[in-house]
Length: 200
Image (spheres, rainbow, N blue to C red):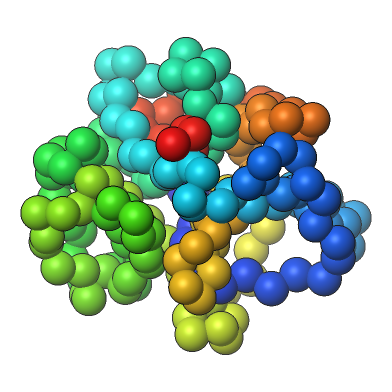
């Protein structure tokens, strides 16, 4: 099992965002010897998309981004030792994996013109949902950090602003190529699903 994507409702960081391309800004945060790259996408210009490859067709985020000509890709959610995705996956409007109940996870939900993050218990099926991915832990709720068990590991995260107008990827591991900004964090192995960002 390899967690790769954590959700947050809101991400506040200090520093100056730098434009990388129209609708893309980047920020690097150095804290306690660790460096983290944040890439913020304007959702009027870009759209997140859930991609499922399946256990027999795994790829790294970097390979997937290149293959799909996407702007960014980060590893998806939890999976078991056989590389089967754990937790809800909706791809192209169709449910590929059912919601995992009884977990304190979040669900990133992509609809036309609106992207949200909800707690797993608050998720409701909707024919307008284009994509969804369930994983945890959630880091922030209603602008406040949640109490989590201390741990140190490479992770990727997704955050939305309060109005759902921007989507920020906190990358490690991941792959981004937007204007002047290029980042490829090598993944140790291929994964069965991912969250990619494409131009509209």
